[in-house]
Image 1 (cartoon, rainbow, N blue to C red):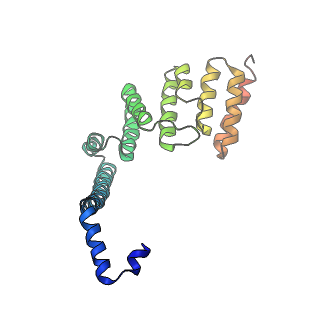
Image 2 (image 1 turned 90 degrees about the horizontal axis):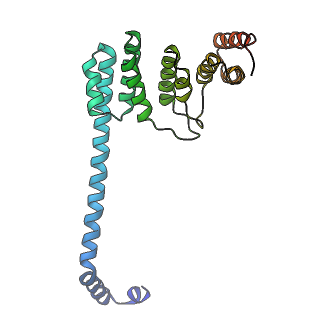
Image 3 (image 1 turned 90 degrees about the vertical axis):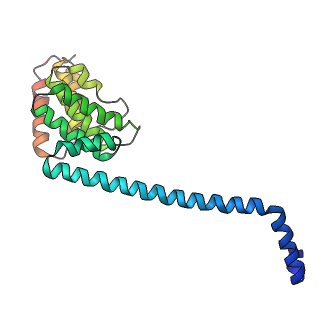
Length: 210
C-alpha cells in the first residue's frame, strides 16, 4: 500500500488496472451479491409490512362487523399471526357461550400450540388461552386435566394459581390447594378477587388437611 501511494500517477493507474484484471470477477460478483441482498431485504420488509396491514385490516373488520368470514380468512391466510390468535380466543369464547365445548377447546389448544412455552418468559396470549382452557376443564369436572394445562416451569398469574387451587380442592388435595390459593393472593391486586380467594381458603378449614 505504501508503494502504491509513493508511486507516480501512471504507476498507480497501472497497479489499479492490474488489480482490476486479476480480481474483476470477484469484485463484480461481490457487487451483485450486495445488490441482491439489499433488494431482497427491501422486498421482505415490504412484503411483511403488507401482510401485517392486510391481516390487521381483516381483524378490524372482523371486530367491527362480527363477520366470521373475515376471521376465517385470517386463520387460513395468516395462521401463525397474532391476529389469528385473537380470532381463536374470541371464537373460543363464543363456542363456550353456545355450549360448543369441544370447538372451544380446539381453538384454545391451537392458540397454545401457536405460542410455545419459553422458560422464564411470560406470554400473555398463551397465558390467557391456558387459563380459559383450564376453566373449561374445571367446569367439566376434569380436575387432573385442569392442572396439566399449565407447564411446570412457566410463570403463573393469580388466576392460574386460583384455578389450580380449585382443581386440587376438588381432588381433596387441600394442602396443595391452600399453597396455590396463597400464591394467588400474593399475585393479585384486585380486592374482589382477593376476597374470593380468602373465602376459598376459609372453606378449606373444613376439609381434612393431608
